[in-house]
Length: 436
Image (cartoon, rainbow, N blue to C red; front, side):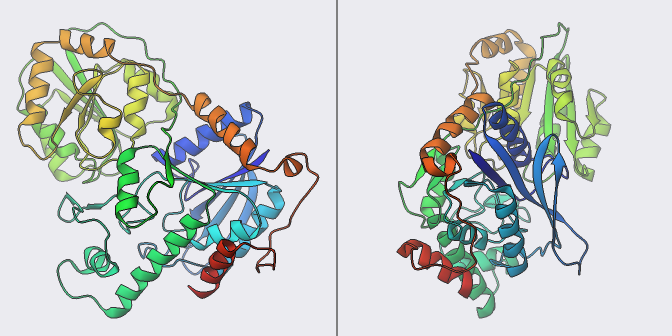
């Protein structure tokens, strides 16, 4: 089996949840006997023509697409230059299945049509709401609130992204309509679509994607072995990025109002804003560190007793599963797919991130009754590993790839034009690729 994984980015440039998962999954699939290549995008200077670089990264075969990124919320739903380079990568890799993990802004939805025109099985794992939401996370940072109505019309999405409550130009509404149609055609081009949480499936179905077509498949995680350290104080930890969505300021404010023998250790990437820094500077019990690598996780998680995840929106956060795999309970927001990972008062605690007092209440409880942390730790069950995940995917790939292609007896080169042998669905995808 020769499988290509497609991602909007990779750990070479950014260590986000999708990038880390694709990296770890690629290695786990290789260990399971699958020939893996990765196609991903990387930002290039403005005005530069897209180019494809084939090389090894982290012991993996990668096709690095360097292209200027047009930050237009994914309204560019097709790009002929990128499509041509994607065809090159498919041909050079000689893959017999393509598994999309993310496209985001840099990769147009038309790549799904290109994959289908190559007569290859196409799989898609949804990691967030990008197919339905131009903002990706159904979150409006300007107002620090989630989208309650959902992406029900192109006009509503255009107004949300570009103009608040004001009027929007008809051309912009039309652009969002094209984006919606392209996303649905890409979805229809897939032979299998999975999502890690029921929450995310609900968003897609609420946005008009076919009900019952997305399979719930929790993501695996590379286990973290972090021996417990004895200490005389309770240490809380935050691991993530500094953004409005991650809500670190609320965590710091809540912790600053709680007395007792406790510390808050913050590990984050990006720029910590003035509100967060002022809270940290007021309280010597808080300490902030910069970004961390995967190799740092055992030491970091050994040094904390409870992970705090105060996000305003999340799908299926990897950091929560990493902490649980290390035996660290999670104190997390009751939002998105988090309750599908953290069971209240079993392996962690849940709170409303918009309530000014609830997080403070639980911090105070855990500081005054540290024995509760041990009870929560005892309630942590088995966490699905990346190796288990890879073996499940290997079985799906084997079922999807015709035996003659697995045995190398048949090879169909990618084509830029549909043939008379295409199904009605493939003709529809091809038509959209040409017209959008």
